[in-house]
Image (cartoon, rainbow, N blue to C red; front, top):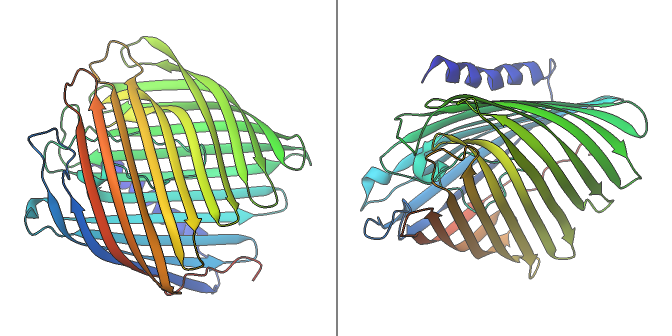
Length: 400
């Protein structure tokens, strides 16, 4: 692990110390454990003829340490995920995660610090599943789903933000972030170290009680080990809405001027639209976006992405779950050797909660990937049966 990665990992720890209350707080511990059996007929998402089929037990355990105070909320969640495949022990993995979230509210300001840490096998890090993975409009670029050798990825990020109320109708938003990604082994066109630093400033104008208009300026610095530094700056306009039932939606458009390491300049368009709502027994998350960022293939790319998650409660104890993620990546530099990539994964299943703290889950998933100029597509099918244990499923709110 290099010195830069160690410095990034130290930042969430410093934030924990700074955020922890000086006096004794009312802490709660929310553990969860999922144990099950996993099957996949092409675990590495390899092209036909080189598939590796796996099956075996899986355990995913986490515990949220959470504190609620009058003006703030703090949580830290360590998590471990382990798989064991008796027929393919070289693909066994133990992955480690840690998520930090601290909020502070005052009369005119709202401050938030989020930190993430993940040390995991590249099969999991480079093949995102259909889980949402972030809020509406959040950017997600990086994976490339080329698993050529056994390898592990270390990812650490820190994202502070602050909202400052200027008046009843206007508000300033400040957002910053730093992400550092390192691989144990550098693999050409597959796993290359990179880092991202970004900053944005926005002016929020409330149009009415439900909707707002945000004018935002943003800048970013992408440092890829094999390519050098690429910078970008641009502007975007966003309309957002939220009602009393917590239905949220947004519509975004903008452009970014990208100055490549080669010295050339390209204009990249930014866009986004999404909605998240609960109505009756149905819950829907839908997000369409176009963003710019680095890829572990060693290039700065534009990503078009669809994220969809749908849940329907058939009864108070039985729910149907379905999700879909689709992405298309292409290099910003039209002269780059990067192969355009299309990727899609979906899952469907059900969850039966036979007791408040115990659930049975059954799910099937399918994944497809295609690279430009590659005559063969890669596909995989998988299934999982698991039991989820959540003894503290109901979390307290600040008003309790």
